[in-house]
Amino acid sequence: MSAVLESVEPSYRLMKLGDLDCVMSIENLAYPFPWSEAIFQDCIKVGYHCWVAELDNAIVGYAVFINAVEECHLLNLCVNPILQGRGLGRKLLSNVLGNAKDYNARCVFLEVRASNQHAVELYESEGFNEVGLRENYYPSNHGREDAVIYAKEL
Ligand SMILES: CC(C)(COP(=O)(O)OP(=O)(O)OC[C@H]1O[C@@H](n2cnc3c(N)ncnc32)[C@H](O)[C@@H]1OP(=O)(O)O)[C@@H](O)C(=O)NCCC(=O)NCCS
Image (cartoon, rainbow, N blue to C red; front, side):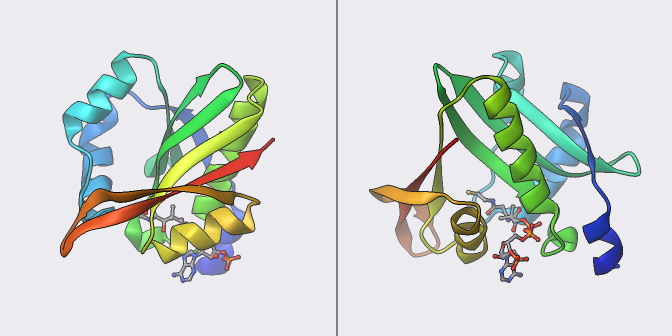
């Protein structure tokens, strides 16, 4: 299963409002403090880059990002938990970076929970560097948690 998935490239398309049932089921499984459906609706309506990755026409992950003047801000990157650890997150991130380049972004920024080891390993292995810290930024089960700010020059 793992080897098969790693050799397959997902297809990517823009997220639609009609995808949100599926997206929310993944979001609720993947995050301890998930985004609400209203946040996704707003992101789609204001024209943020909201992409889904599909395998066999089923949504397996998604990314939400903004391409502003020469900067890309990655707001959400998520893979269905039952398919994590098989290379999909790296492929999805690569798709985001390619899109940011197409929009002439020079730098990509993101924030990640300090405890999110898998995401930190992914970002660092893709050349992101820690550039800042927002203390007590995220809610957590034990009070608040720091956000680490990462950046990658394109
Ligand atoms: C972070 C996330 C997108 C990574 O997606 P993924 O498909 O699991 O990641 P990949 O299989 O492409 O792995 C990429 C790298 O992440 C790290 N990683 C991923 N899963 C891991 C695991 N189970 N154990 C250890 N490291 C892991 C490794 O460095 C891995 O590289 P390697 O396979 O070369 O060792 C995914 O775990 C996820 O959706 N998490 C929940 C949502 C989230 O936290 N998003 C990030 C918000 S900033």
